[in-house]
Image (cartoon, rainbow, N blue to C red; front, side, top):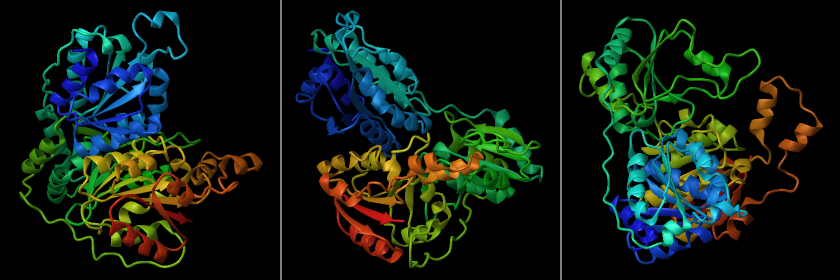
Length: 513
């Protein structure tokens, strides 16, 4: 058996079921092995950033890693932006990168690169196989590393001769370690802060944003009066009716400072301390008040759910506490696009147990509060700020959860980074409704120009404008095999969205705003 077949069989034994791929010459023996090894679904992406984003969306929703197959260092480099988002979300991914044969590398052929160095920028585990006999054990270790809490990217560089040489055997799966328990001191510290009577806030992220984590956090809030918030970017969050209505810390620094003002105790449950997305002249980088004490209840790799449950018990909270009613479904609005009104329209029409993948940039900032009353759903978001995430993340999420409707909310400028994901949606017949916010400009940059105190002028108008020539999203979608419609009002969107949700398969709605 050659190294490539041993690799494929080891991945299947470790319950890796999907491989998102954009292969090249160095990976041909692995591609050939996939013909002989059942159990590993192959999904083609037409750009490496799509491959990486698909694996991110899949891993967040499946709770286990997919594999990616990329071609040498430049192929990996093309995927780094969405691997960066995945790293920030602690998404489990096994990234397989083909490389030149070991004896060919010294000749410095055109595709030769420091692939390990590129991989280390986004991976927490990197290894290059030295021989065909090593490949299977390396693959088992990669899957284990990807699944080690809190999850991450494990990159295995596979030289071509290690793939084609004989003498390999599959390896058995290696169990990842469990999440570490929270220390008793961290529990006592958090309980003491919450009993002080001073204003307190729990900042929740990662596994604390699932159903169980939110129920436990609601118990803590019920017993202590603490406020609940999430970071500005959430990797995955259970939302809608029956879940605690927990809002994000705002993106804008001034608004974030206002939300956190007066907080004396900030307790982190799976979250990092909140900082500004960027630095701005005359504004702080850290967002909590100077007289606020930070308390780390659970780090991302620790058992945040168990810690929140134990903290609630320590505070004497009832086992079940009521979740505040978010009120009736919002009424549908009329007229042109407005972020809050769009959120109400989305909430009114969102299917039960939908998955929302959001990279809406400026158009998405007001969507959380207006969708608290929607049907139960999950929300995933770009966590690293590298735009062009929602199209491929929605694609991967649809493969992970084929029984659930996926709704992709994508800004038009950001969507141009990864629009090839629409082709994969059509090819795989995925149940995704894509909504593109077509403001025909980089609106986020117009706001950032003002935020840093710079004056607009001819160069900024030229560099932020996407209207010359006009990008026709309906034509782009149809060219990739996805049906599409164009709308300009909220009532037209509501009708188009309802019709798209009533059918299966990919669809795109271009909303002119």
